[in-house]
Amino acid sequence: MKYIIEHMEQGFTEWVTLEYCQIIRDVGKDNLILTSLPGQIKEDDIPLCLREMGLNWTTKDTTEFLDLNTAKLCLLDPRAEIDLQPADKLKFDYFVFGGILGDHPPRDRTSELKHKLGCETRRLGHLQMTTDTAVRTTKLIVEGTKFEDIKFIDYPEIRYNIHEATEMPFRYVLNDQNEPILPEGMLNLIKKDSEKTLDDFF
Image (cartoon, rainbow, N blue to C red; front, top):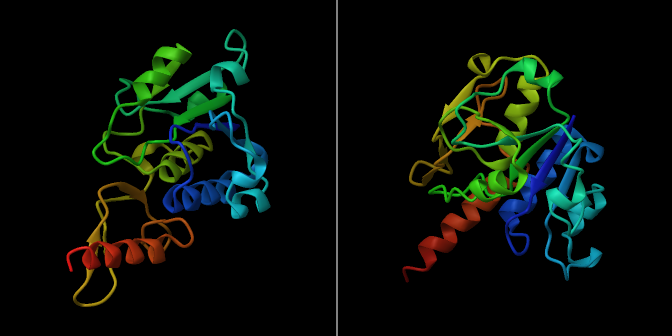
């Protein structure tokens, strides 16, 4: 199964970089393709950690990268009417994500992709997910786990100490210890961003 992320930002924020690194860990470098990078981008412009992990990327968008007449595509769309099911594994070869699933509030730029691709769409429940969570959830489903059997936590509170905490406005998959699965390094980044925000008031 191949996972395509149509990168809809100009560059790579730390947040996006950590998410993409985690997706490679989850699905393997050969199963992830990042499309629609800016036309002027060079190999050295890709964050080092992604290069070292073997990120597959292209400046072509998904419509140019694949033959839409033959490729069996499914776009993951929060506004789709049908939820993804394990049986969809037999129907699709590629699952496409807009690299903006983590926006809060959602900006519905996935509708741009839907218009361009003209392919079938599926939903992963009704709550917003980060991009890595959406890919993780899709992988679990196509490997046989029904959506309703996946353990989620909605809007978890990330606490640093007794005085400081941040509520994450997304749905996450829980691990075996009933903790939200975050990309490696994300907790430190969230804490750093929180401290930066507090400093801005002084």
